[in-house]
Length: 244
Image (tube, rainbow, N blue to C red; front, top):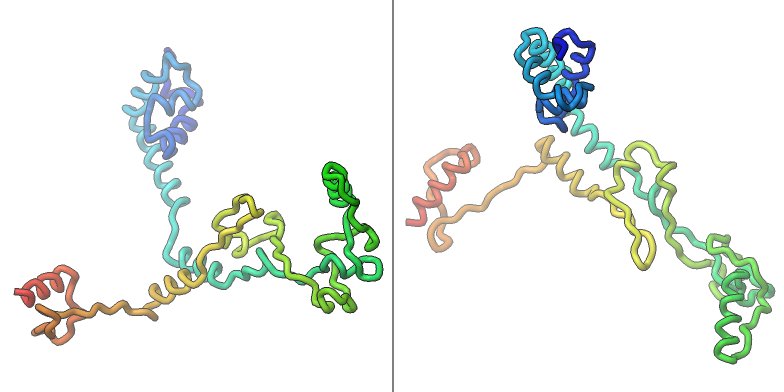
């Protein structure tokens, strides 16, 4: 086996060794870096014994730690972006045409596929074909007709989801999950009210207060000027004393 310390694979070994997925396993890091399976354990052992390689590992760890650093300001900035995100850019309600809006003389309008299916069902049931006097061409997202006698020109409500590929920034981050159910797509959004409360707590705008009582609900005897300065342990001890 050639001396692994002089190998061109050493920088790759250091990089692999510091990856969280490799858990600083020298043998695995050597194998991932390019050493053959039969040499990986010996190469990893020798590399870790070398002072220069140890220095390279320390420097790589520092770089990884710096890249992974998330400050309180970063978290607060993300919270604010999420709290201000416009949910209507993700899911929104629109008024669309009803079945009678754009039919001939405002009669029920079909699309060709569903009319063919309705005719097949009628034929199997030996029933009359459905009336198609309103014509064809109905679209679920068509505009309402102001003179429609069925919906009085208001159309009907329908829910639409924005294409996620068109979303950027806070609105994209606001989506907590998407799944398909028997009723269609379900989009789950992060709780913006809870996020606002988190921001308020972080900024000291909300203060959680504890109501403390003594035995059998009697007033708590406190010999301190400001009970809120007590730690949780001190409060627990104080309550315990008053319960006796």
